[in-house]
Image (cartoon, rainbow, N blue to C red; front, side, top):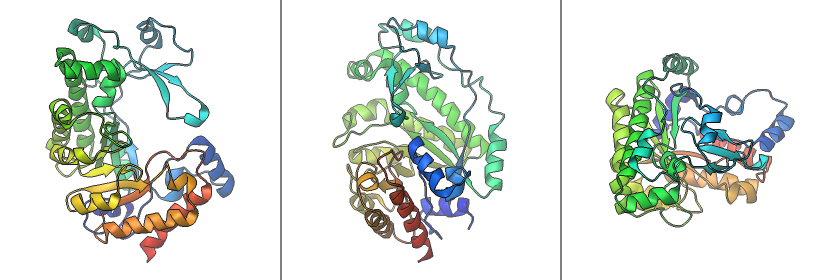
Length: 356
């Protein structure tokens, strides 16, 4: 098997030849990696990560002057704006993936205000690059992925604010329906575009869990979000029926798993061990669902020993068994507290398992 074939077979629970790795390092850890290895290769190339992303449809960047003018308050001068007009105020260098968000629709008070807001036009966006990128990735024996995290819920609350959007949903306000539908429509188009290009895996996700509880009731989720997620997945599968759907949510999401399965997901990420127990999830859903993650970035990776890391990798792969169904990996970005010895222990444990 080449890396693509091995990964797809692993995720489809039809056996695999070796345990692939997957990780993202923060800047300080990447600097430690460069110093240790003297390598100029990318992290993905050096460690043999078995997939690469094809780029999304190319939507023009937001005009920062126009985006900034929509906020009554004075924003930090380094605030940047994504294609949805959401303001991202940077944090410290150590918190590279965390920003303070500024919500452009937080103070909207009518449906007309929402409808007047300029949303990104993915229909008119350029997708001419996608097929060529997927073909190039496949030519290297790698799986191709399409990245669509913040698929519906997170994009919506980033725009409206979580408090306002939750209130809209609880009140059955037409503003919630319009905003969620507008984002779903665009996500479905993007998903179909990735599928048309031939990606193997579509990476969706919206955080719907907290550390020890779900973010909203199942009734609220199944009224407002699950049917829309199902629509996005259906759009991709209408084009490419065998596309693998990964779904990301941090935190505790066990009560939502039946709903996510009904929506059509194939792989749940990241299965944080601080929030859920992999063995329990596998015993309940291991015949119908695969998993990515399980190696804690709140506990084992930063604060365990190298032996702890190796033992966790081996234990979880053993639970999944020879048919696969687990792509064992850190559950999030590896932060500065993680020793490089633990990073290498993770890689070695995967390689040792594959050679056992």
